[in-house]
Image 1 (cartoon, rainbow, N blue to C red):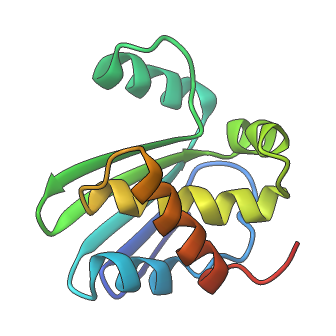
Image 2: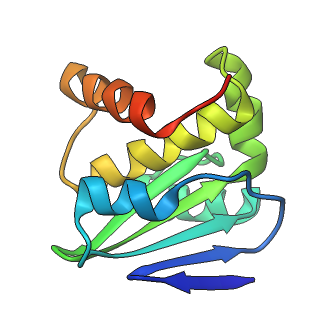
Length: 131
């Protein structure tokens, strides 16, 4: 299934996606004119991309690919995210919110570290309403 809305394309290949304010997160962090594609992929696809682009031979919950200053892609593997949510002692839905925020912060140019963690916490407080 493919849905498109205001410079945001979501491609779902499998799984049910919880309600997440994808467009609001994209516009707040990347801007209204940024073209973002979010692909919900299988573990096999995640592993292939992780191996090709990061030389890591395992599936991961999220991968971000900036294509230009105004366009990028995020790959999220729902089954890996569900597994990893437990590792972070978060609900699956809250963890998916965090992953989307994490991915767009990478597309914005942020690297892992305390600044990125502070931004993640700030945005999670704004966009996630639940447990």
